[in-house]
Length: 280
Picture 1 (cartoon, helix red, strand yellow):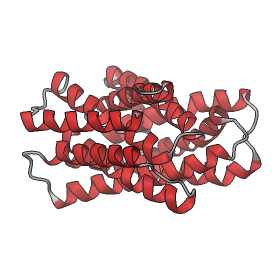
Picture 2 (picture 1 turned 30 degrees about the horizontal axis):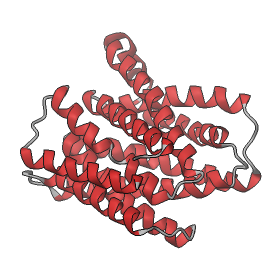
Picture 3 (picture 1 turned 45 degrees about the vertical axis):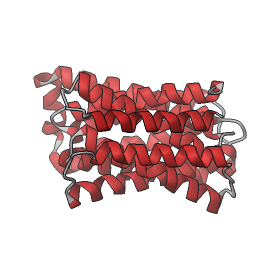
């Protein structure tokens, strides 16, 4: 049976799939990610000003993670331009748990037990199977998704180490890291101009509203993960979080009208079996 922490991380997985679906469902994903980032940045600023500062040892990790997250945002937008949600999302998320496990072993000296190792392999394998089942994956699309997966692994390991050095301040750590999301509107205006940024507020208010909602869901989802990284093995937390791919398949089928084969449902069962292994 999954622990309390595992159940909370599974809830974060549902939240994560939800905001990715919101992002993918919008026509202009760069604009959508920018407004998501503004919502995240506003919440982060309010929280950062009201919480004690993280310990000094965690600040290099806050800065590094914030910068990697900006690259992740841009990479994610690029992935969704090249592939649909049911393809890009699983490749990106499925490649990260194994990379996180390797990074945690190298830099945090974490060891993984047999059941957790099997769980990570099942989840990663099932996720990749979900992505490639019955689909022709272009080299550019796969490379974009794998690059996104690598950034996910990088910021997860950085945050896993950084939050443990924050002197028990996971919320404050998360808030200060998310302040870097203010770079997204700067990048958008620099590349497209102020008019392209503001005009959709009048012409496409529902899209802007869904983006802001997605940003709020996003900060809750990753805040939970950082909280779990304080004490949980990074690879196991990452793998459990990536069961969000199963939720993404369901959302893609129910709300985005994407087709799902029987083989893909079977791969979802494999992912679920991996989650059970992590709960043993």
